[in-house]
Image (cartoon, rainbow, N blue to C red; front, side, top):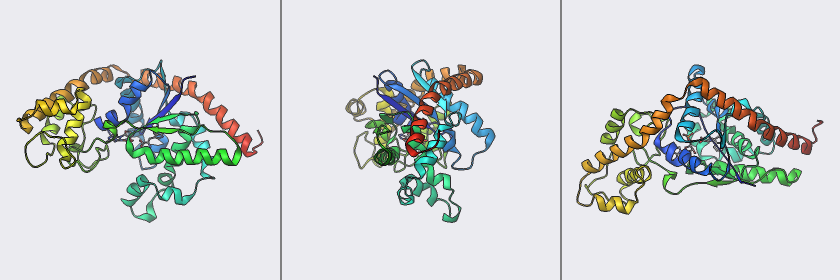
Length: 327
Ligand code: AMP
Ligand code: TRP
């Protein structure tokens, strides 16, 4: 039996090369070896206010991005979270074995809640990791490919799965996070101390997968660099190190090869080549993206939901029996 992987992204903001290198690129490789399920997590997206029209459009767009990046609906199942109501139902049940203090400790919650006044923080934002745990354990997931920022949520998923198993008997597979080393944290182009983020204030922080060639070149030109002018890879040169990581991952060249190639050259040469690499690696992706129609994508998503729903329903029914619900 193949092992199962499950992952998801929220349909909000613009998907950028950090999401691609930290998450989706791995998915494309993993789908060859694993029984793969990829989700567009709209229930998670509404933990912060969303414009309904935009949410609808972003949901389709994100699925299109999955497909354009190389997720193959023949090999993998892709679907929209809200199409499978078992996710929300299991989340409720898991809430009853989750401690408030465990959720208050979550870094992402503290970050997101910290930006608002405490009185106004929504319950959904706090409960976000419990829904994520439900997503994962509904499907007997073995591995969860995500960027480093999500590993704490996979950790609490493990805790909840183990806790349920202990209280009610062996029910859930306890999953593990799967994080690749290099792509795990792509930093902002305008500030290499912060991760590249789709909710960044400035669009010069990220390169969106759908950015035009002109915009990509402009963003790379504007990217901050470190003092000095050498292309060397080290801890104390975070800006150039980040650009070298992007170069290495998208251009498929080792860091030491890149350092050798630019020895004695300045930032201008390096940046101009980096822009070529980013533009060229996104081109085939953008061509595929533009060819997909919304109707086609919606069809694929509905089919995906039909294929995963029986798995979710079976697991939830097992859970209900264990809890003593009359079924
Ligand atoms: P998010 O954009 O936060 O919904 O994240 C979607 C996926 O991309 C998650 O697996 C994240 O861990 C990953 N991710 C987001 N930002 C980055 C980044 N700057 N570098 C690497 N991975 C990232
Ligand atoms: N919280 C994840 C993120 O922001 C998205 C997500 C929701 C997810 N459910 C998941 C990722 C289940 C992996 C598995 O990136």
